[in-house]
Image (cartoon, rainbow, N blue to C red; front, side, top):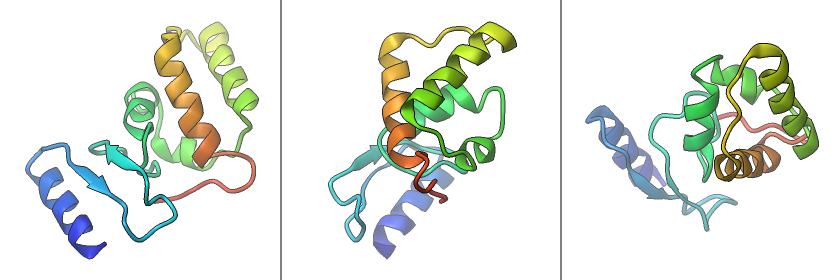
Length: 112
């Protein structure tokens, strides 16, 4: 685990995107190719979530939330209708909703 963290930190320092396997956690089957995702939990889907969401607001705002999948989806609709956000293409929207439902649901948001 320490070697993976050092390798990831070294890659980030060089501006590279690293593929790392979380070997000693409950996410052991997840391979993440995510780069820098701010305050978001590093897992599959974090990169696309960061790309869309961090352009308008802090990743800590996302990390502090706890919504159902439906709640997140309603927030997207609100942002499009009331805040002028461009609609997210369905493929990316599904990836983001999968990520948020898994890591920022009502039971317990993850923090890095």
